[in-house]
Length: 99
Image (cartoon, rainbow, N blue to C red; front, side):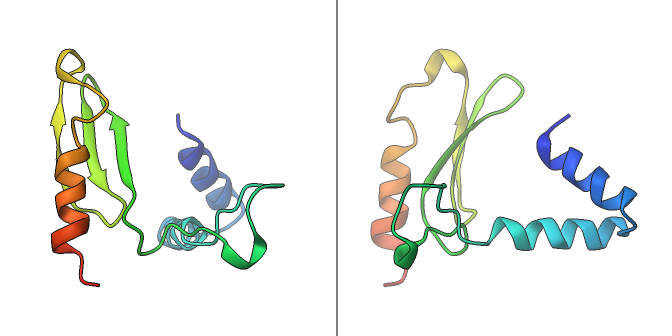
């Protein structure tokens, strides 16, 4: 089970309906994410509207996406290298994202 699932279960046990719990967790995901003791309080990071490269390991493959949701592809571990999604992400950020 993931931490997200544990949190959803705890919210539902506390009386939230599933849809309400999901909505609350989604809102929390968009709040500023400055780690304790790091960063400048005036320049907090946020998960909303960004364009960070995200690489996740799935069942038996790596998935590349942009933080905004743009899918960049999938590769198996034997084909994975540090820059496998970098070119696609850079193209997306430099040419597709409106300034």
